[in-house]
Amino acid sequence: MNPNPFWQNIFRNQANKQTLAYFLSQVPMFSKLSRRELKFLEKIVHIRNFEADEMIFSAGDIGSGMYIIRSGQVQIFSIDTNGKEVEQAILEPGDFFGEVALTGTRPRTAGARATTASSLMGLFRSDILEATLRHPAPTAKILFGLNRVLADRLHQCSQQLELLQAGATTPEEPHNE
Image (cartoon, rainbow, N blue to C red):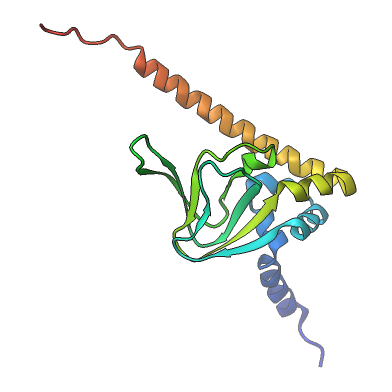
């Protein structure tokens, strides 16, 4: 007896949604990649698992790559002038962080910690550099996606800075002596 192809396709689609390539296609930075390019990207990412409260990296570390959250939750934080942690964001599956590290060897400006058991995909600068030499076309598309994200984030920061400056230029209230 031949199996009904209708049911086979349903289960195949479910299986496809479990693949790394499918997951990567849902990340905005990689959303414009073809299926073939996603399969290439799948080969150069590294799966890293972290336990709850485990540090992923600290502010000041030299960045080597970015991370995409497959499961779990990650806290991004900075340290204020009094040495206290200041939460910047809580990130969840599909979110990514540390992408500036793909562009050069600068110290990280914030720390990252898994707040729950987490599975992350790491994409590292050394792998991107090697892929640029061996597979320039898909790597260029990955880098254009990175550029798009960095440009969007820079634009958002510029807008926030303008708002802060506008608030700082309001006249001060007179002091009564």
